[in-house]
Image (cartoon, rainbow, N blue to C red):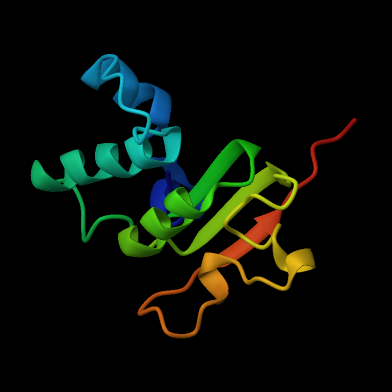
Length: 125
């Protein structure tokens, strides 16, 4: 999770899934994805007095495939501003990879109380 306004506007990493996994240890819980762990890391720092409401305006960079619907909704609840990922999930993802099936990404559902921008960034070969 990145605060885009930190470090003089150059961005500051505020939490990562791997950092939070190290702090929490292995939980064996399949719902403890890297995205959820990054959100939990930000929430933990917020409770200690070093931040605002969850991930408001933060940017989430996902190194792997498109986040699934579970992670996409968690990002909505956390109030992120932008999500960037590097690989479509073959129609299973929650951010628009299902559009070919006529379905929307979670961020495109008008009835939710928060939406965010999504970017696909193909890694250089």
